Length: 373
Image (cartoon, rainbow, N blue to C red; front, side):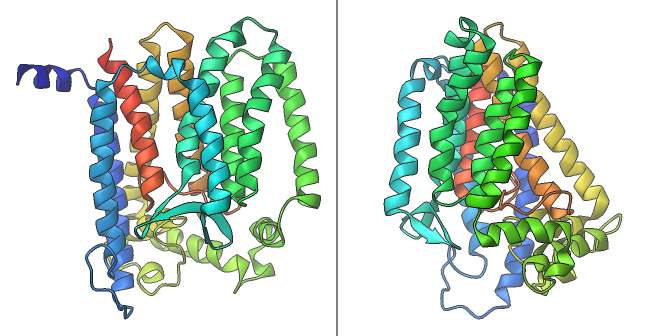
């Protein structure tokens, strides 16, 4: 008993509590979305696959995520640096395998289907990529020139980005690229090289527009600038999202009383647009509370990183904060029409077992660092 209490006392509770409350916001949003689904006739009456199935499945994923956090916190995190090459190989294998054996959902072959549950490998790859890049920047990256560091780290990331683009999952591919760029920026690379990268990224964006992006992906970007181009098609999602966010007011309409979500005007309520569901039903106050929780959670990663002197730990935990922060920024930005809709979900809040468990692994690693103090 004393060892358990000692273990619990050494955990970073602000990080854990912010995670629990964010997951609570997610369950509120999914419960509301389930109420809207319950009005639709369905053949399934099971708990996990019935009208309220997304809520109960997410609750199950949350329980598994808590176990992952506690188990990972007990493991010495330093082993991650020694297994970086193996993690990179696994990442490549997972992404290649899903292209051949994965399930296609809405045009993207990015999930393994096992017993009715979908597993999205790219979510785990995000965690592995941060660890691999942290190992590189903290090891050989300190012994080579800034330019070579940039080039080598780019070619470490590029194959994974290409495999994800082949699914095609443009949103996740962009996230992998941005994770690399963010970690490169904190690794001490020269500002001139970062500026050159930005220019190169602009050139790549032009080439991607011409030769890589699918017509529906181009439509998303064009509709972002002008939703009226296709108000009942590509522009419908973001238009309904903005209406839902704006209609929530200060205090919201109440859980289960959002007209856009309950009347199913708002699409992808469980994933891409759960922020709009919460904004409509909990209002500005609820959204501000959730935003504060995200700030606390991300700041705790950085705080824990500062307790260690080794470059690997600092870079890895900062990389986790970058990965989570990017998803938060992109998802909320797309919900309020600041960014194009790319299919990026809201961490800990949107429905999805792969995303939730991968983020819990990040928290578990951070707690392992805290536990090793």
